[in-house]
Length: 421
Image (tube, rainbow, N blue to C red):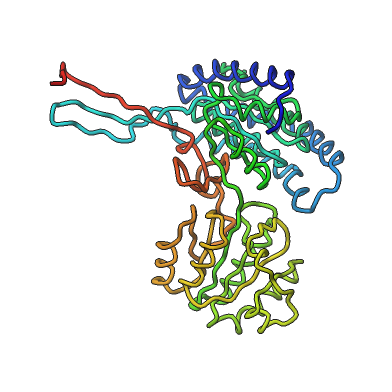
C-alpha cells in the first residue's frame, strides 16, 4: 500500500473539506443555476481554446515512449475541445436528476412512502491520460448535485488544469462554489493514496484507466468504488449475418479508436459462415493496419495468421491487434465470452432475430448489442450527454454511468398522525 506523504495528505484533506461544503450548496442549487454553470464553462472552453491546446501540446511533448493508442487518448484537437464544449451543453439540456420521485406507494395504514433521488455527495475521480474526462466528470457531477475531486494522470496534468479553469469560470459566473469541481494540482502518488483512504471525506471513488490503476483502487480503497477493470469486448458474427454489415461493424468496432474500452478485442465467427466471410474481414482490417492472433480453426482458413495462445483471449489489446476464434453457434460464443470476457460490452451481428434475442438474454455483460459496433458503448451515444465511466460490477450501476447513476436515494414518509402499535 502506498505511503501517504504529509503534504499530499494535507492537500487532499483541504480539498475534500472544501468539496464537502460545496456539495451542500450544490445539492440545494436549482436547475437553472447548474445549467448556467455548464453553459458558462462551455463558452469558456471555446474562448480559451488556444490556452487548452497549448497546455495539451506541452503534455504531449513531455510524455515519452507513448504508444499510438496512449497518444490518441492524450491528444486534444480543436474538434475534440469543441466536442467537450458541446458535451457540457448537452448535459445542461438533460433533466435534473435530483429530487425525482422514483417510486411512491401507500401502505394499508395510510402512510405514503416516496423514494426520492438525491446526490451522492462528494465523488473522487482518478483517471489517467484522457483530458476530456475532466470536462465530462465535472459536468455530470455538477448536474447530479455532487462535488467532485479529479485527479488525472501526470501525463495530462497541464491539460486537466486548463480545462478545469474553464469549468471554474462557469461556476463563478453562476454563483456556485468553485470547490464544487476541483482538480488535483500534483501528480504525487500519495495524493491518490489519500483519496483511497478518504472515508468520511469522499462518498464514492471512480477509477478510469488501465487495469493496474483500477486493480490498485479496488484493493486499497476504504471508500465505495464504481469501476470496470478491463474492456475485453467481443463481436460475434452469427451464421445469419449480412456479410457487408458484418464487415463494416467489425472494422468500426476494432479500428475506429483502438485505445478505448469499447473497442472490440476478440472476434468470434460462426463456423458456418467463417470460410466465406473471415478472409474478407481479415483483408479489411489488415488494410487498416490490424494484426491478428487466431485459433487453429481460423488458421485452417487463413494459415498466414499468427497463432493465438490462450492468454491472447484474455488480453485487452488497446491497440491494432485482434484475437480471432471460430465458434459453433450462439451457445459456444456465449461460453467463450463467459470464460474470457470482462462483462463490459459484447455484440452479435445477425439477421436472425431469435438468435439475437437468445444472445442478449443469456449474456451477463453490462451491455449487449445487436447489429451495432461495440464502440457505441459510450454515455454520449446513450443520450447521457457524457459519462463518468463504464461500470461492470453487479451493484448500483452497470454500463455507461451518467446522471441517474450518479444519484442515490432517500425515503420520505408522509403520515396523518399514525402511531405504530
